[in-house]
Image (tube, rainbow, N blue to C red):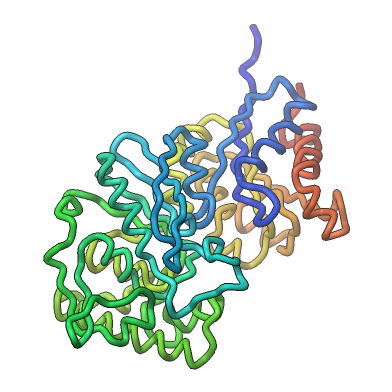
Length: 382
């Protein structure tokens, strides 16, 4: 009787700037099949709540949907989200991320970038019948405390003269009125899950402006201005809602978007990779598998603090399945890799030592590593 095929689950994150998670999974899978066509290979791209979260959901069977909304500085952008029944997956980076700035990194707008378009996408998901909304909030260009998305959903924000508040975090310094009476009533029946690995509070030296503002182009004076503006937002929100949430770990995620979602949408903050793995059915795929292969651009100290490969390793360990990691550069010691749950680690630098060439040849290198793994003891014999 023919023995059951060994299943290998290929679940990488993106190799930023070089390959999407789906492209990486396809290349590794192609290498495995080239050497071991007898393997049962399941390609399951993953993400940790940032760039690629919607793509991971679509690869797992969610249906893509598109809507034209405001980008981070008001320009129209075509944003994608994903749907499966009553569940929608929405990615902040797809709407108001740094890559959505006109001119990219050369046009950083730390004071005026807004999450307004994110609220418009949420409204579009409500129109499509969403009752559970997953927000991936990595990669934001804004530091507006989620005020923009709430304006788009009906919360009235006004200055001292009663004029509608402008977009962006700096405008919150002029905030005088918060009126949530117009908040879309459909939201009362919606469960919000925010996928984020950030544990920063909203305010202070460890808060949204201080920690992440410089990455979005804010200098020291602008960081201080944004922190004061967010404090104003938090003070008025507390007076309206009665909730003290500014110090909650994760409130500072995505320029304070976590705070806005907590205060007005009743959101629950969840580690990004854990939430994504649940959405894409990782536990079902890995049950009975013989090996999991994961990876990202770099395996380093940040990987250990909650990035996608570490989350994949934790989830696979619950099923007793060994995990191999693939990365452009592996900067962890053998002991650190073992503690994180990796039985082996493969570096693209070993395939192509030249960094520039390695980045331009990521997919062929990943395929070659797939061949190496297929010929190794990790997958046993034919």
